[in-house]
Length: 411
Image (tube, rainbow, N blue to C red):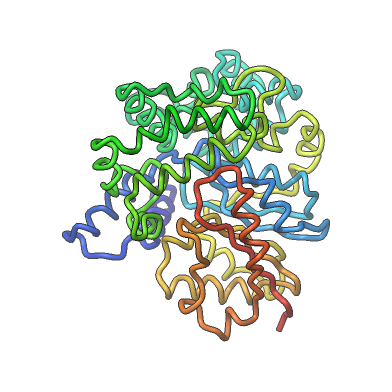
């Protein structure tokens, strides 16, 4: 049964990504991405939860549904005090990471243990804490995942002793980018020494900007497969690049990450340039890892469920007018018009009056007009000015657009 279920989920991932025939160039790229996406992709989610919670305006009676990814945001939404959070994902590694986080929050002795496990994620003491406090409370598939070995023979739980955020597809991508930068004489960690936003700008202009003019870097980033580590399938690569060279787009996104936000408040920049959250009591952290939120998160864990499921399929099983807040991350960039229409039909059917949908796109514009029928999309109000503001303030800086839709009435 477990094999059959895993096969079904893999088929769902393929359905979400594959748009071209096997032996075409795009078809080969799509299947290569699907293969790469089978393991852990994001040890940390790369959407800003502070922006999310402001845009969603979560209320105490709300049922929130989100894509799980690395689990940071789903857990962080607990600080907004919703009635329930459902986190779904097709990636078995992400489900295992989410369930591990819930068990650790519930059973580790105190905040210090929890912070060491996920805020530092690089101590052998975490392995002892796992065996003593967390392992006995995991379901069998989650325990089996963490105690089995990855493709190069490392026990997965060992990542918490040697740097979890250096693992996964994105962790490997960032590590490879650091190696390439050093080979070109660039220190990726240089900006972390800055003491002001002005100094961050000076370091970026002097150290990082010229890197994107290197011939090898421009050639490499023109290859769609080079960005699989960012979790970007071929279709999203095209949307991200648009008419520009990919090196130019990436430089612009990195410039925003490096220069638009104070490093003291931007844990995404620390992950990109330092491959972790940094050391010391002042290191920036996601809301769920902040000491002042620990008691609230632990107290509200029973409000969260983690499901190995397709987002649209989950909605198909929900009653009419039963959900309030929807977070889609950037999943719609992967979808065909038919998939988008089915998704939004189900969102509209299950949404209560005043429901909100938040998503991100690789490019700047919202992708829905002209692709989702007006009979469905016309029920929703696009908050254009607010969406531009959320895009500007999203500290992760990866996406071209953050988009908010609000349901004005329920049928």
